[in-house]
Length: 387
Image (cartoon, rainbow, N blue to C red; front, side, top):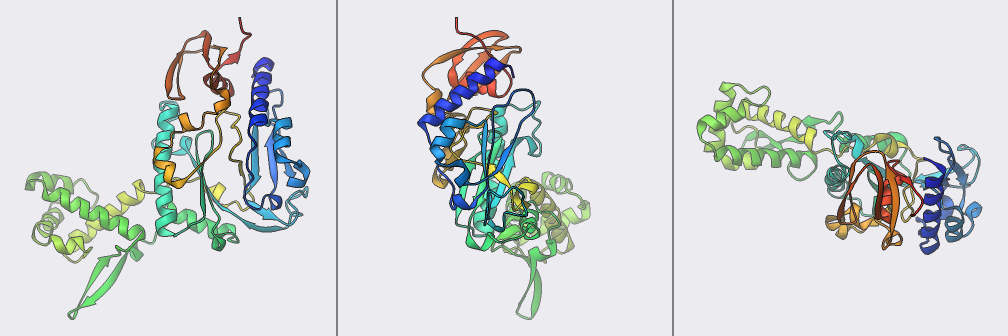
């Protein structure tokens, strides 16, 4: 990034912070604060080990410093401004989850547009929230668009705050279905002198597998026998013989299967349940970034600040507004709307932002300021003097 571009971004960030003061997290005085300034050169410098006392008035600090990136700690400390981690006196920490579009399965950043990556990440966020709300019954949660490539979720229920790294890793493993105890998805039910193995359908991974089994059975019942046999044999471990018994069970006793009864159809249905379990745990996980969740001292982006790699706002999202939230519209700062600037690009690019699509050509381009800032912050454009 050249000096003109850097200074322009720094000045516009300062103007933003003079009009907007980011709101602090709960227990702000017990947290460590950090930021990355607009340093020259290719490297970055992290300024950390600061407390609210060190920063002073938060609004004045941001208006004067206009950082490139700003963070606060998930942890609460006795002395958050201590210069060493050991000297801070750890008390507790939010349980934080990070979803990064670049790390999602099946997403290739070289082939996928920024808008497509963010859409895929929002889908993953929906799955994560289902785990947190339905499986863990967490209530005190804050959802945040990171301003860059994904989303953060801060859980602040009292029972999670003092969990150590190992306990947090167990949460990660459950959400990502790592070493999942598949035997625990089934329980034994006794009735009328008989016992049968039944999928747990009241919640958790058992419910997900049970729903997949019911949907699969319904799909098979809508096919003719030849098509159904072919579909069944696409699954690992199911040959013609097992496919025949499974299809017969689906045709003859659909009620038992809807109840998750794995004895209806013998070993074939049990093998089908195993195959569907593998499919469900491969497709319905939430691909969270493990180190962020297990780190009890993590620094995380402060909502209301600007992301120095996009010039978009790190944005809190009310749960009821999440379905309609569009980061490429709702995270565009109003301060950067209403005027145009000139930037220079080396390559042709398409920018989808603010509800519009802009085709950027090599050379000089005149764009709405928010689009120009986005390109410059990403390193895809340079600021040029206005003509």
